[in-house]
Length: 255
Image (cartoon, rainbow, N blue to C red; front, side, top):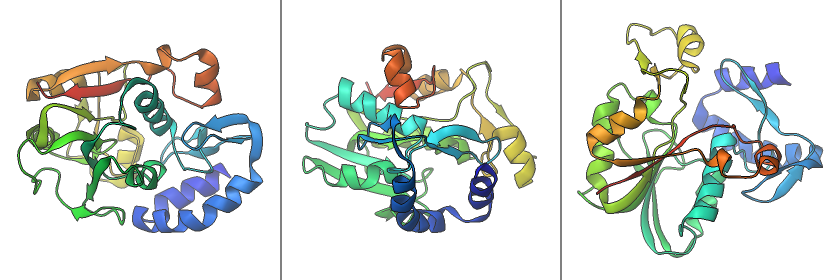
């Protein structure tokens, strides 16, 4: 199954994968019913989760029901337990909207919810993150998760995110991160997809972020909280929800 999933991820374009997933998801969910692991987004339980990864695959990480990964489930738990996201009115902008969240966020009547991306079929507005068609200080909340590692000029993208966030607003800007690496590594001469997958972790990534990611956000102007939420949750919850122990949530605010 791991080889099949790897082949699918590396050969089928993401917009087509999104459409195919609506057909495959109910079948896989039925086949993997169980009580060992739970997806906190829909509270459904399974005997195991699916493998996932473009390069080196991770076992037991992809929820059969919502298609959430570790980062999605971590974010959901943080929003649910630590914020008023699910109750307070807010104007929200969501970049590259994840299937695990898209319909659920759209149904929340207290939110003015807009999605954006260059290619996603789930995007309301097609836009370049480095040149956004939005006014200054427009959004209370921004989600931009696992996007910046794809962007050659991530500084410009961060500046645009800061510009459109309201003062006092919150932006959660998750990225794949090597916490053992002090300095972010990037090399724009590496263009071969196989080399990129081997070095950066995915064929369309252009860098590997290190711990300096947080400081870069601060230089842009954000107040950044580095939240190790798996250290706050109980160990049983981390295991049951299949979270990545030690993953840091970059929760950013505009002063």
